[in-house]
Length: 390
Image 1 (cartoon, rainbow, N blue to C red):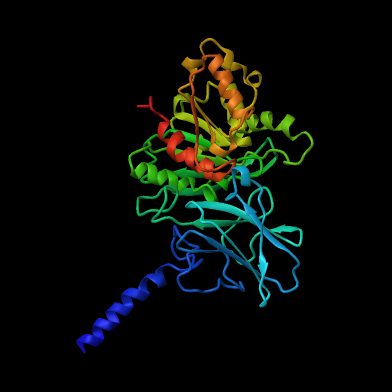
Image 2: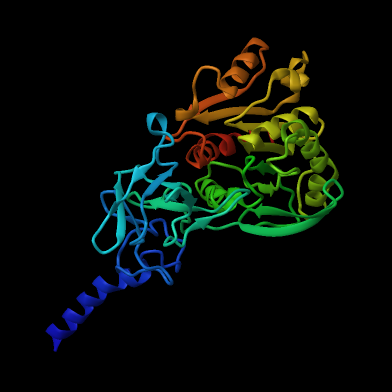
């Protein structure tokens, strides 16, 4: 009997982990949801795709006996491989497969091209959305949770809210992160964090993992607790012929007339320029530069991620006392998006000529993608905010 019990205990120990973590199980906020532990096909799918093996190679699959061609591309291909499309091979069973890697541990975005039609992976339940067609998400795990993963630490809260905008004459979405232990009797600094021209209010939360990044930084003692506001900086249809000419002033109006008043009426924030920061990625970085530098009475810190607009469009940078008006100006980009003539590099060089104090950083293993922007947020921008704030 003792031997039988020992066998049962041993078998339970072996089986239990597989019940806790399985391919696309959506039970826990797993850091390795693509690892195949039970060989179970997701509900309503017909094959497992993607499957991440222990050596960090990835297998994609799609079933289609009558298909003529299938390829995959995505943010896992950077540098000389940017925009690469890898072909699938059709099996006798009508299942097309493609194996790539090994890849660095990261969250990637990818798309299939099936007979000339771009589409999300129909068997992957981790599908993203934004101000463009849906895409799929790929988790390549390392040896444990990464800096952007959910860990066993105190977690903040994401509030999905709506407000009326007189600028767009409609109801608009805004996401607000409050830190662990948020206490309305206290006052917090606030960061306004925007996505790019193809993003929405939820981009930094759903795909950028901004809430988990902030949770982890606070738990590690690397950043001060803050409120992070994630607005929708789409004020005009992205494909409108006058998008670039109109978007900047519309975003500026929206912040002053709608976003800041809504946040300061509903959350316990410090109502002072030294406790307000504005940042964004790509087009959101350009918006942050424009809004922040046109409203230095409102913002003391600005973060420009993979972006920039010409100095002449934010003339405050030429003021003799500009350094006394800026608490922190960050300009950052990814390793694989830096080249001669890149906007952020030109902007950095112009700031140097004007002797404007700023923090310039190039890093990450990514290009113009969330691999870069998550890295910039965790390793540089968030830890350096509010250094002078008591």
